[in-house]
Length: 182
Image (cartoon, rainbow, N blue to C red; front, side):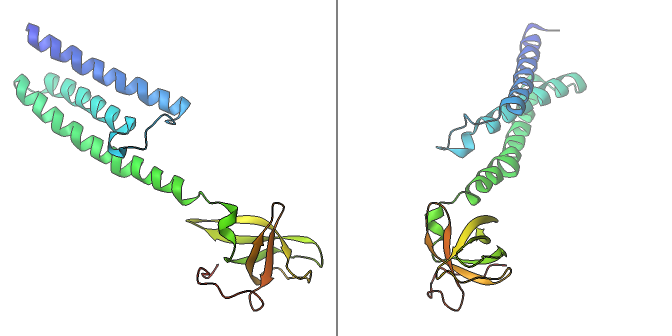
């Protein structure tokens, strides 16, 4: 091998190894150290690009008779493609999924819900409320102390530390935020 060819082969191998080690570290420890400032510069995207550049470079150097600049250029194109795929197929959906399940209990006031566990007179039951992309179960108590049957539609009137205060849909206040709960 020529001196320059060996240097690039070593560089490709190191980049591929760093990418593999990083992938194992993320698998074991997670990627909680990622920044929210510029999601395109997420560590997963950067390492995917570096590992892909190394992998494409090694493969093309060994399997083709292309010159070094051509191998480096094609490897760079492959790395950019892989990093774009990593961003659009992994990083962005995961960021959206994290946001879609976060909520504050105080946001539940005025929202419709369904009773999943009947609320007895002056007692506690459970309601299901649509929050973001999912559903959540919350302890609930009737506003006027009357029983509310399972499956009945209710509206959250107040949020207390121990439970949501609910009223039957007909009794509840009209709210512009209320949407149908399935």
